[in-house]
Image (cartoon, rainbow, N blue to C red; front, side, top):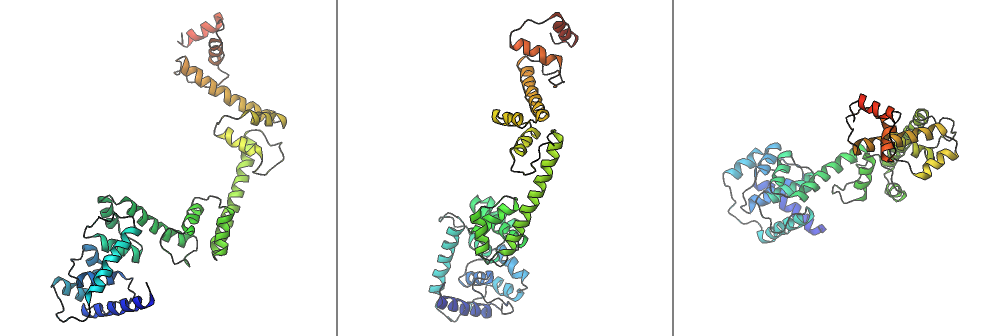
Length: 328
């Protein structure tokens, strides 16, 4: 909006406030939701419940009374054509911005989009209305606008005047909220754009993650009998291996070799036990003995199933053991 156009709209808004008894409303910006409401009224467009609720919330009861009485000013104080076209252009721009199909023409749309664009938040019922008309992309943007505002407060970035979530700041703060590590480019963006408090929060967050990771590494080394390994760095291959053991994830051959090379025999033995346990589970499923609850590879059943898998003859003792557990 150019400077002259802005001044014209400010004057127009002032005229409408005077005409519709809304001069107590202090905001003179043409971006105000009230400006849209009064323009729509002035063009004879029926306003929605959302707009009446806004008028009530701002205690513009005289304005409401005038609107409901069907008040119109007989004398023509300005040329409406220009402003009417501006209203149409504005709606078209809002549709594009908030991903609304061009041919979507329901009565409630303009005030809702304008409110979102000026107030930066919709109520639950207003969101529900958009959902009811399958405006999913619009709802997603509205939710992002709300999320962006909350994140700016949380991460001390309120100096940023943008509310629309198409800025790098929104994506960066979403990563912060998930405690994800920023790229060098993202950190530099915060620094170069003066978001030093946000950067400090991120720095402290990374330090806390480092402390937590180091504590976890120490705990896992103790649990998996690897305390004799001196390296405390979380970048050590051992930390990655121990995290896999903790989640019972299969180790690569190279990782098993690494344990052997570094003489972590107890840890290697634990890894072998886990692999045997996985194999035992597979064999129980294959030979339909899953009702046998013991999953320890030290079980006699594991040894017997291994023999069956290798087509080896079972001993009398093996058969007697199976009979004793009704597994024949």
